[in-house]
Image (cartoon, rainbow, N blue to C red; front, top):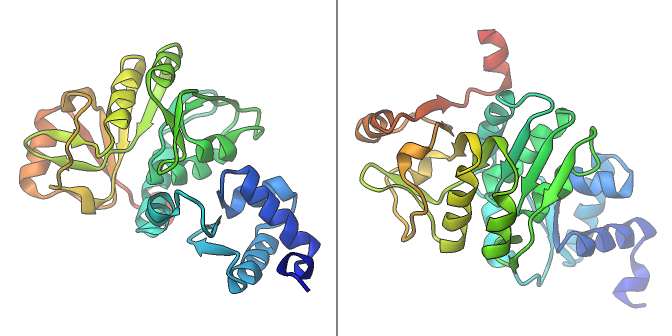
Length: 267
């Protein structure tokens, strides 16, 4: 009997949903696509991972052999607890009815999940995963930017994406970066990502960057904007003194993510 024939109807449905999602999806996205509970999704993923058909990451799964799995899916799985903490803090700043831009960063992917509790958002994004998380949910309007798809990011970049991004006005631009240091500010490994961030920042009221502490003091080759264009940085730990002083001189407010329980206690 072939592997395909031995798979259950639910397993075949989940595999098809992953293919339609570009090879990767969060558990919450799969539950929505299949109209089942997240627990059902987790059980199905566990069975398929034992067969070697898919691989599990924190909160999701991807098809084995997908071209982008060496980088994108590994980044989603790394430091997931810290990224979710940051995402929760980011979501607290967003009100129903706001207009947002979200980029392809892995922390931003967690933020998209947290934003599913909001209503009537207008969201522009170059990320396939962000669009999947928010489209068709709580009367959100989602605009997926065009342009050249990058398989290592599962997102669109280039002139078309930048031109479309400039046509929308944002209350918040929720961005990521690959590094920050006290000499050059926020830096990117991908020049196209740096260029798109700079384009988005032309049309936003507040620019917010979510970043976990392992990126503090690190470096990357591309800078798309001046650091004083950033308004808020949300992170999981306080930067060291020299970086904190520099962020302050650039006019950036640093928010340390405290988690839902600690925030509730503070209120």
